[in-house]
Length: 503
Image (cartoon, rainbow, N blue to C red; front, side):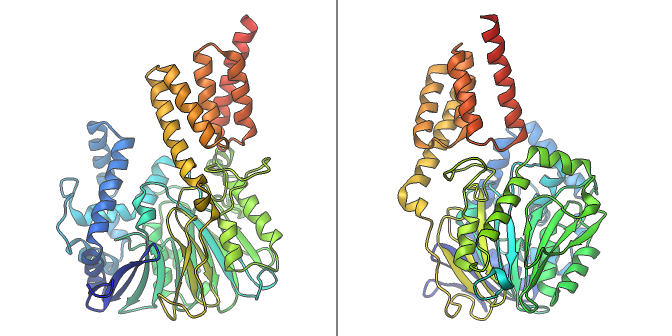
């Protein structure tokens, strides 16, 4: 430990400007061992929080055991789809520190399953309640013609994934050096750029295709980073991979100044070309081959993908000819939803739903990436470069969102806590306490429709149907993000109307 750096051989880890950064050098086992040793305290904290999150969602010990058995059986062939180099890196990683969670399962297999957590959750739950949004623009759309790419990575599973995010610089023994953004111990790539100026981001998609097991998508993206020097090479790696979920890969090439989206299902693969000099990606496929898929239609009816896609498209068009890294940061921080004149705070239909573990902006032409400091994409965006990792020449930090200084974000957190309290009191049938907590939440964040939905439920149970009717109307006016939530309000309205009729 010297000058704020923790060093092991040629590798290092340190925290600066609110972001962990790591440089890992050498063969796969050495790189894995290095991050396991250097980041041990962060890894332990992160896994503990991750396990607590799972227990929160699966409180029954029997159900938790059954889930463990199911995942073990389902993923018993997972190593068959992971390259030897990736397995060696993981072996180095798990051998680097004493395992405090061995009671859950052997470290190697447990950590390998964590690398497939996105895929497993996507395949089993098919959850539309999170969403990532991204774009690439170049030529006439950007201020200097550079290829600018930006994305949000919405993965609100545990706070440490946001607070302890890591920007990695990988210098492999074989292949291309690359930068990617993840968390301690994560080998897979969800947002990255390599020395050949190929950049990649991932967005979950939907189709009717299924497969039991395959290569985790983040490891497919890692192969792209380490091996692809052109878009054609990147597409071939993705097309030839065996995946068990649906994913959109936004690919950009800073040399040619062009971007595409590869829409990949377990059985099909299509390349979506840009519209002019820009391309947008959310959580649905646009290639013709997927348009009749039932699961995608159901997802679009329930989720927020189209709303976020349309808003991102509108912002890119509004800023045509003026897009810079700063403009891109403003776009991924956008909190507007349809029908409202002012930004919301925490609405899942917004590009910035306050669920991101990271947001990134690439100047793919220059080989520079700006990464958001916690919380979410509200913190300052710190630049990292392929040519000078920690201090890219001429690239400045982009300031934090004014929402932090105003206190509105802190009030949002307090409001969320009060709403959670209200729901607990309501479940316990303590209606007066639930009402008080809900009103507190409303004062702190009047743009949250969940508060008014909860107030409507409380008012119905208190037989105050006039108040309940008003709360339902207020919730609808704040743009309800999900289909099942709109259905919930319809059912509340029906209950209210039936009592009004009987009176």
